[in-house]
Length: 434
Image (cartoon, one colour):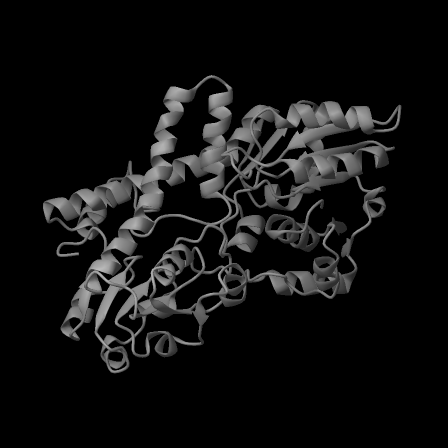
């Protein structure tokens, strides 16, 4: 497993649980030492147990030396492909570094399998370069096997996925993938066998579809506000249409994290490289609508604070980009909190899991433990991550600790009638009366 970030660590632990012997490689010595002790370097339900079990049984090992994978039959490339600085395109520097380190070691028949999300056409370049780097006479094949992990459900998605995609141009490579995933295939998991380019497009296309769905419902929410309608009722109506369904149909602060934002932008960048600038404009608007949700939330907060933020106290519930994760990459919640702080508000943030990561990114914010501590003396409270803990907060008790009972539900997780009955000025994007 080349790369032990979120994807590589989870994939390594789950393949080990399936009975394979797995070696995880990374250049981060501190992370490798952490993993060697069987500890999870990030929050993901069920992962720590699998890591401990794998290390204890000897089926799972971690190293910083690429030579430790010389005898492996399959090499999964799981490095990060973040957005490039100053560009919407994907930064593939970690991918090319991994290929450069791995290639000269491939002196035996093996398959290099990409799991990283990359621009379409990358796999073909990897194949060419590996065959140039590998020792003469070695048989190296390339395949692509995209991941579809949801943070907070990654172990479940790995061990019980809804589909497996095998991109391979030889029967031998396809058979290797079937062998790797034999326990899952035997359990009835659906598999799709396709070419390299289609497999590369699978993950980024799925994310583009999901991002579009989220931005569309946020557009509908804005129309609801302008028309004095209620987006919660509207989405219930839409969700009952079996052609549409209710998943990813919740309006609010918008999407974030390490996948949807950068994958959508990278898809646009690659489409433009392929001469498709005009049709790619749809996804540019999807991204713009998503970012607009953050600005709209800040504007609403400022308006509720009487047009001024300096000298006010704001309680923020949530820093992670979504519940079930400690990931703050491109987190809308943290972005809104930091923007209000930059405008002079004293912002207190509470998140059940993401505080250490949030503090590293925005040390200027005050982080506290518990909902009441975040809301103590607050002139305004914002719910910005959809943790179940926040949905269960008692509005009567919380009203006793704030300076003013005003709240913005940025994730539509609260019962507005319950909060208004408790004396709160309740607001949410897309709901009648906001």
